Length: 160
Image 1 (spheres, rainbow, N blue to C red):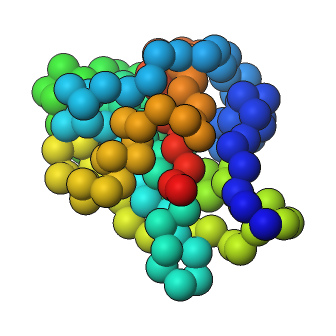
Image 2: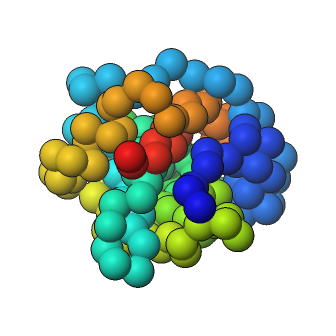
């Protein structure tokens, strides 16, 4: 009765469906501490508010996926990257993606997981969430390339 990491194909299929275009997914290096300030951090808990998983999307994937799901032209994402600031609309879209990403961690044999909190880049996520995001072990690190936009990284880490 424990949660399991998704396979890369499940991540690809979810992004394909969400963004309405075929993304490319490849294995990537794990996130480093220096990456955290430029990362959207999403914290997932069970019904008892026990931390189950943490997902991080780097600044680029936050901008590109947040723009693509909202049908915002690539220039909108590029402006966010150039300004080093996620716009309100792209940020809201990226948070909605995080909500849907909970489905990657849910399975029939374990308690239901839901999005508990999100921290946009620079938002100061809790230390325990960051520790799981950086720990080696039960994690999946992928580079997601959104056609017409660009590529960025996602890290999915299970707690415990």
